[in-house]
Image (tube, rainbow, N blue to C red; front, side, top):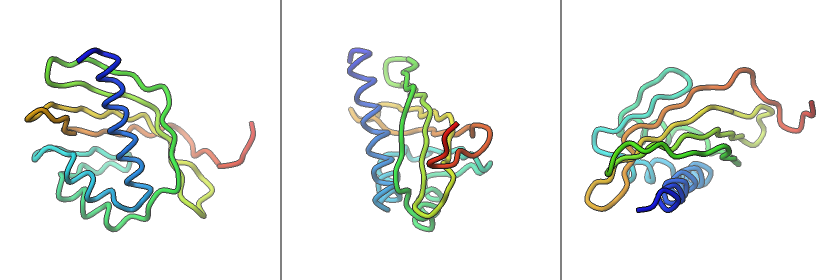
Length: 133
């Protein structure tokens, strides 16, 4: 697959994931997307395996909206690639926006891209929605 084609495919997976997090269906989505031994390394310092991700997402309120910016693809071989981007998300009723640098490592298994590792690095300081600088 060409680099632009792969980039677009993986970016669509990220968008589908965020859409699921906004719809409250993130647990089902990520259970299906993650590899058996996949993990998420979250901004709060937790490292969750696939089962713990599902439990966590079932207990977490959905996001109200998100933005993906500055996305880029890092080649990692024929059957793996890394999507790196800045993510921002907010929840209704919360004045701050969660902003982090995010990396998703995908591996191709049985002709399907699967998420092996997702990692968040929080950006300094909370951003307040509606604030102008």
